[in-house]
Image (tube, rainbow, N blue to C red):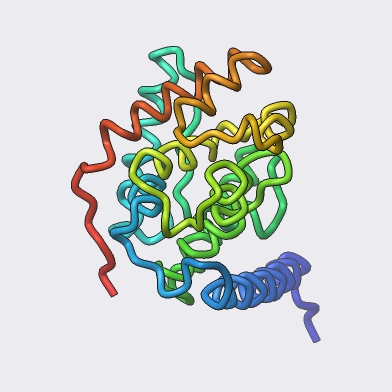
Length: 231
């Protein structure tokens, strides 16, 4: 009897491992809909609109991968603003769950494949809700709920337009520890994003300038047309 080629066994083993990873991701993402004040997520909420505008305007149109985001990232690179923003929200969810952050082509390729496959298993609303509830916004701040309450003393769904734009701006620029600690004091409790930025200038001026740029961009772009859920 002829032996089965080793390469076939290797491929089968990888497919089994991939299926297990996808099942685990599916379970975690589906469970996200039962947690947080954003249960029954409303795509018209300021925090949702701000995140979509800054992170993935085509989120509800693509299936986990977006060519336009890559072209935008290349454009950013040639403008001297760094190479970022190429990942869809779906890909970022895969990254959060897998806890793989190394900057390699192999990791990016696997992440893209898993994001596309995840789209075939769960709804866009569940993916978005998981992202909002589990993204890192800064020191000791995981999810929009904890972030909104710590900075503005409000639930995520109660954030106004400007507050939502500021919180969304933290996704690629997490709140530094020194700024987090300063906001614990009642006397330093801000009521506007501008006050947060002003306080931040004392501790992390470079971060304050960068997040201020993102914040102003979000405010100017939040009313851009977004195609909402297809399902």
